[in-house]
Image (cartoon, rainbow over all chains, first blue to last red; front, side, top):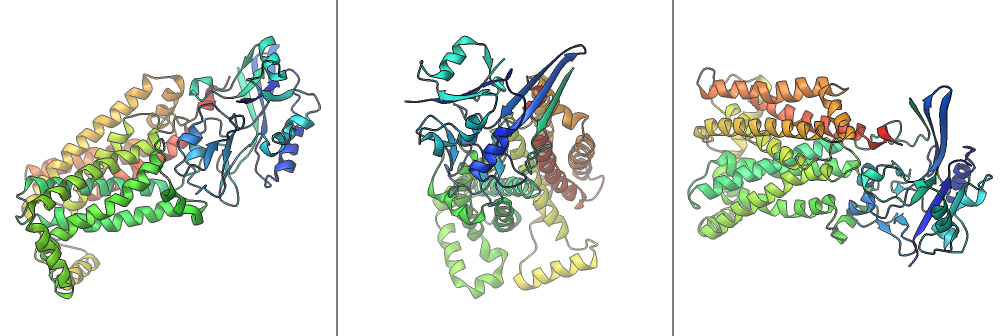
Length: 179
Length: 347
């Protein structure tokens, strides 16, 4: 049983948005919409300020509220790696999953169905990294199986402190940010 | 100081979520109203002798209006869907963790229960229709001759009405990502709001059909047309004070539940306190205090209290206020709920 996660080194990310462009190109994301995006958080008081740049997307939560609220089962957890996916043909566009996601990671595709990051499962099944990971010029993004102790993501998590987004929401997100 | 910049602008999501427009509040309002009509009709059927003549306004007019209103509500719900051609997928599965899935199946059961309630006394309510379709008289006679069927219909209406009324609140309450909705009080709140709007609607219908009442020309014309077509006798006016009294009880409970909802949020986490602030002193405060609390609950409470004391005559004013207040409550809760968010305290 695999458990796919993403580990992102916020010290390396420069917010170049290559990951955003790669995702839009790879997944044919319509103009004006984003499956992944960049955030910048500045903390402190000058001159002791700190800046954290993050690349964000669906957190593929282990306890996904978007899946439990879906009335048709269109939102589901894929058997491979626990990736959260949407079956477009089963989605009725009720938008409950959009309201249920604390990360606002979903949107309604112009064709009517709920859409979001898939961890590029079509690439992963071929043994490739997600598009965003594969193009990152600073190599700040890492993708792999958390259940494999020898994987790069497991070793990174063991070596440095990491945090997830909104752990208090109880969704058990699977994207970790090394700080 | 924390400064947060987000490089994303997904339609309906950014800068603040607004995925549900007018359709969902209207659906929640009509669903609650129909739930109230079902409970009132069911209780009325059960507390009266099963085969006795019922108060037609509760047991026939209410369920008939309920059928029409529920259809309108479902139309609003359908209009909200962005992938409309796939709506039939709702009925290919049952997802026990999804309140919307529960609701879609409950709605399927609500129609026959409402119809059975309306059919029991339909020939008395609309004689012209029963003359044209004699089968309606046979159905009514069959039901009235069997008290068990009447009791079963009453119970089904009460149980399904409770389920429908609570579901409209749980639908939002289950979405933990929106702190304002994240409360178990929302289910009972929408249930009692639905009951108050249902009692107000029935009370308003009784007041409107009272002879001698000065009506606007157009309303008078419409009512006389309906009366002429249906050849219905006058509705039982004696139930009007009971409905006004019931409405005041429901409004009082609704006010208490609103208080509990806000107290629950104000004594919870920072995001919940912020969410309550949207209603108490934020951008939705004016509408909440004036239209929901003032005009939608307190003023009709006062007016109906004076009516019951015979200080003023029964008018449709409290009914209109309660119905508008119930609708605005849904609009405010849906809009403010979407505006409430966890990200205000992002690390």
